[in-house]
Length: 526
Ligand code: FAD
Ligand code: SIN
Image: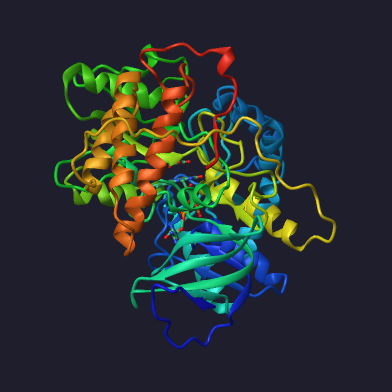
């Protein structure tokens, strides 16, 4: 460990150097740390909040794996490719679906208890899956069960964990990532750790939007860190909006799982009309982007802020057993799902783009890996299939750790020949001062949200570039997160402006058709 010249360093009992520094303690970071620890590596996990604060703990629906009778990895692969709207990397998706069952077995070995029915693992159904294949735990608290199982195991195994410690720079020497600079928020000091290898597992960037299901830690830090040190970032125009987040005045946004629609819930507009059959033959179980856009459109018709989700054909006991967290949360808000329709709206949910990696988690910077939601492996394409993200974290974290310890060296990830960098936009001076987070979130929600236009995107891109130039050096967690969100916002809006078509989750009302010419990825490199 070395001190950053800008801040003092307290006494340290930990070693100066770790074989592996993992940034983030959601499922991706903890699983990678446990795997590396099993290989005998010295591992440091740095995480910016408490260990369990991550998107992972809020995951409800579950984790997809073709383990049911009559189902197959090939069928799961077909659904994944179909949902991804022409941009799924087929080889990566084949790996995802064929290695799923083994990774589920790892999670069980690490203590995760999946729900069972009649002695068999219980499998739920979600949108655009052609079979029931979603393993869940505690009904609708799958993520919490996974997060707590992995974090308590990591502690028991003696993995070194630093909470309230935020990575704010990846240090590259001679083209290789060699160290991470960390900011210890409790001591207000910066410390640099040298690392044999670095794994970014920092999750997504949902906090960049005003309406989101993501927790506060999801500010896109890993994407900004990777871009800042020269790694490539891909597919940033694709943010997934979940169609059904609870929308009540004075209440935080809370996800109502797609699994509720999987159990037969229907969507109604303000006129009491069931609208989804008008939009897609699979109605409420259509791909997520279609349901989110339909809900957005129906809400716009009446200038309201929600549509209604109805599962009143199920009784209270059944709902309390199958969806205990959702049922209780609605009840606390004065809504009984067995009697009342639930007000819901779309919300930013998942960052499909991220740090470009190969199928072993390698980025274009040797020594730097990215796993989980921060990464872009290509398995989601333009629209992620529900419950494929928890699966992606473990499948590719496993392969990244194997890559670290394998003897033979496979070819690294080649830089993309047509990567571009963020354009300079110095010509306009429209922002008098550095932004507040709320301004940024509102801007992204209204100008780079579910329905986009060139005009709105251009306005946002210019403002974001201006904000970036006005931001003083980051000195604490809030300013570091703001810096990350501005970089991610720029990557998202520039990519969305370039992609003059509609595909998957990226919808341009000025280019509503999908174009073959755009069946390609947009890659950025500084
Ligand atoms: P996260 O779990 O988000 O963990 C990221 C970690 O990085 C956190 O510990 C964070 O504190 C840390 N971190 C971030 N920046 C820094 C930094 N600069 N320095 C140090 N640490 C940092 N997917 C499914 O497959 N099935 C589901 O049912 C499902 N339901 C969901 C429900 C909700 C409400 C949400 C928000 C997401 C859901 N998802 C679901 C998506 C899925 O939960 C996430 O994609 C997945 O958990 C991501 O795991 P991760 O480990 O990559 O990131
Ligand atoms: C949900 O439970 O609806 C979320 C599932 C997912 O995001 O994959």
